[in-house]
Length: 193
Image (cartoon, rainbow, N blue to C red):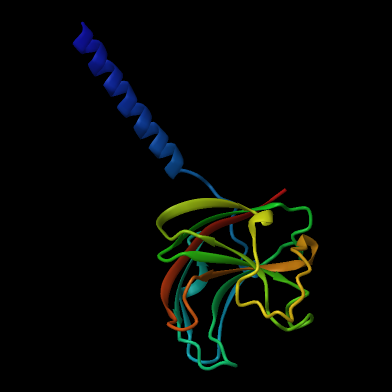
């Protein structure tokens, strides 16, 4: 009798695990809007490779090849850009991203005080997410974003102002000195109150 109960419990546990796995695999995400996504690379030889179009089959697949920094005045870059649907992060406190990236991924917030209409330093606030070869969903709080070490001393720290953020940049974490290659995939991005 004890053996039958143990076997039955093990079978039920296995069935529950299968059902849970199936439900997780069947998650649906809000569709990515093609008008809110683009990408950019430097003019020094870095590349972005896509399959026909940026958004296919409900997600983004992009391979970046970043060249090493050219010299002290010319830095290379690669970036996947999400233009915010309401032109700012006003009223938002968190970002939830479902992604795959074979190296750590940096989320950068583009704030008007630091760009071409600001101090032109292109300083920003950022946070680093871990590398993952499987779909992962990470939720990050805007309070946890920080300015990178390379930020020029001349760039005044105004603090992170959500109402002044107009885009979210996703860039695989490659060094200026070495450059490198990485594949980034995005299935969903959500802006949360």
